[in-house]
Image 1 (cartoon, helix red, strand yellow):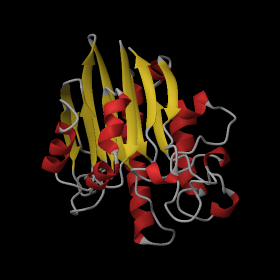
Image 2 (image 1 turned 90 degrees about the horizontal axis):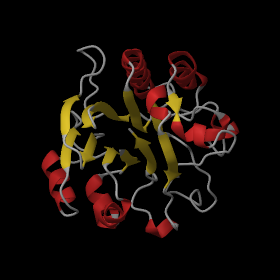
Image 3 (image 1 turned 45 degrees about the vertical axis):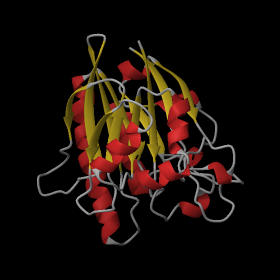
Length: 266
């Protein structure tokens, strides 16, 4: 059975729907859509998706209203979900949602996550490292258990020089710091997670998934590849048709990110 999984940072789901997200959903033919930066109440999310058909909605809202928020909308009925990440005193609300699905008698776990953007030498960067540490620990548990698991979302880190157009100008900026990239080295090289996008394009810069709304970044493709599908080896082995659904033009964008699509044949 082929399951089409999409991840997209919607940059505020209500604004995204006003700009054309509903029309995209109608054409996407997705089975599972993972959202980041929802920035809305669960009722808003349910009501918006109801205009596009029948969906199961799970939402991990942020503690601070109007901030973060991750969700998973699915045609498949979820069998379990979890939102805890890291120590009890660590507030990861709105940034980590694990959902289990039964696919032909096998368990598929899809995780929608939104890593802090961070800012060098500020408390924001401290929180980002705390989150990356907690995420790395949980992902070690997940891959050790084996099975079909994929962590998707806006991870706000470009792993290598291929992931940022202007990498030389960002060596000292949040999103491309050596300390941040080291976490991704651990995930891929030590733990064994597979970056499905990089497997599909091993030597190609990008394909980028985020461009600033400012200036000419989109038109000149001065982007970042920060939206990922990180799969266990078993799931990566049945992945196909990786695609970044880049908008046709600047004025047809309904978010500053592009949906990232993968089919998994389980």
